[in-house]
Image (cartoon, rainbow, N blue to C red; front, side, top):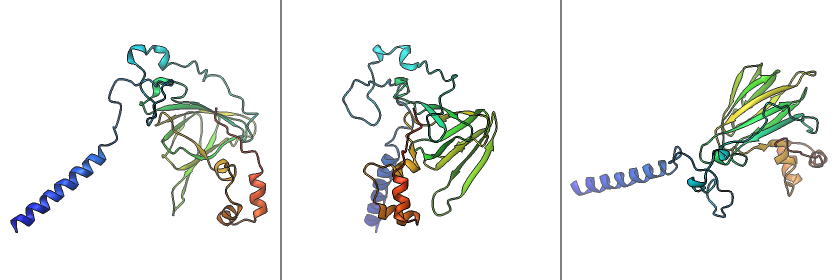
Length: 229
């Protein structure tokens, strides 16, 4: 009986150690002051290889982004322009888990339904009014929405479909968003579903959206432009 109890204890200890190792396998934050991305390295890692700290300068943490300047929204079919500042723009963001975006909205423009697979987003309205919202996962698919005015803040949970729309037909709007990843990613739903390369089978989409195939063909024939820069 004692032998059985001892064996059970050892098995429990081994499982606990394995679970604990799995839980600690991802670092909660940087293990050094900084890890400036070395874009010249051909080594493939989850993120970017660190540049030699002795070669790092203040320029690695700087970008003359001119985020105070309005962006062109006229060329966008959805009437918005997203200027993303991520690790691809500032090498010093590597491993720091944060990025930034300025979003310009034309009158009646929108940042269409999309997700950020790797980031939470917190958005602040700088000018104008925005109708924003996100939808929860299956099976509820509950919409949380709010009309925001200048100075208001709204949070979009990681991975959930969300959007912003400027309801004013006469005035533009501007927002700044912070995202909890150096490379948050963006999946615009309409672009991904109807503009994929190669195209998703019309049998699949017709059944999924409960529409005729000719409607699917019409949607796939549209020009699904990206509003991110």
